Image (cartoon, rainbow, N blue to C red):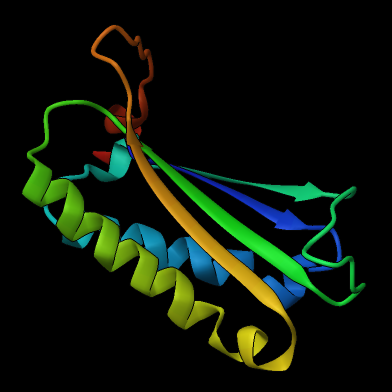
Length: 127
């Protein structure tokens, strides 16, 4: 963990969002906090083709980042990581934010203790 799950309005393209760049920055900052292992990070984006923002103005858009983390981190660690990651998101989207109506939102949630994982990524990363 964490898993970065990004939803965005259908009027925003992957190119205008530079999702590769955004995910690279989020991963770097998440690892840099010292509380998230690289092997546990997953990123995905969902384009919401049907959407309506505010009064329905066609150029209004939204980006929502949901960060799901495993349990066991202190409130201070979670708050600090959330601030860093939201800052990355807003900085990355600054030019888009200046060019059109855009709602940017963020949430960090902790998964319950009873979750299960099975992967071999650490073995491959060690090679």
